[in-house]
Image 1: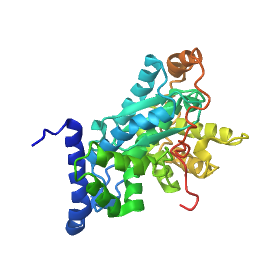
Image 2: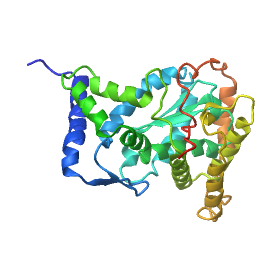
Image 3: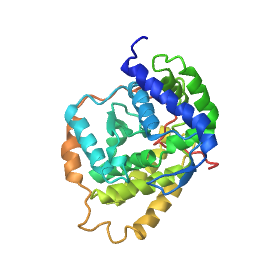
Image 4: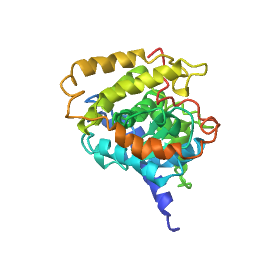
Length: 319
């Protein structure tokens, strides 16, 4: 009997899990409850935690390449990663133990998005528009919220149900090298990087905003930073060429309204007090000053194929 490689064993494990989800799940029934949102969902056709992690790990290199690679400065990358990990520690249940990675993309495109299992991306083009670490925390917290709410898994379940899982299990039956994972990646990311399952509806965006404010505040950041990010996006939207994150939902007013409501109620006694901070000086010292001394990113980085992620954020106006 031939020896199975590590990659093949991982493929086989994912294929078995998908097969059980697709075929045994309907027999057993049952629901799963999300720790971050408290929502109950049918377990049938739903990706497990391990499957979500495997998907994120498989898709991460492709998306990083599509956006021109990482910013070539280790100290700047480490700073962004440190902020992200600090926020992720305040997520629910066992989410702090996810293999979180925060990638700063060397792209002028204004964008941020997340993959299942803890893979978060932000473009240099978006980060350079900010003036404080709290604003950075607002975007990273929002993306972390997409992960903890399992929005990609939710999209997969709604869009494909068990038919996708059955086809993946069939494709992996021969234990082809990473066949199961790659097929799922192709469906989620899209051939040519179109990312149609990485764009979220309005309800999911609002939920991620709410979770992001929760996490950033727990980590000591002023939740008003989330509002300031929305002001940045609104300004960018007024230009001749709106950013990609607004490609199908051009106005962030509904998100601003929810943030304002939360700032006036849940965070009324927090924002602007000494319980939280915006860390503007630290952001200038550790991000804005050093990145201003770097060469500009490639102009077309992030425009070669990947056009639909939108501050994760391509919304469906019908949602």
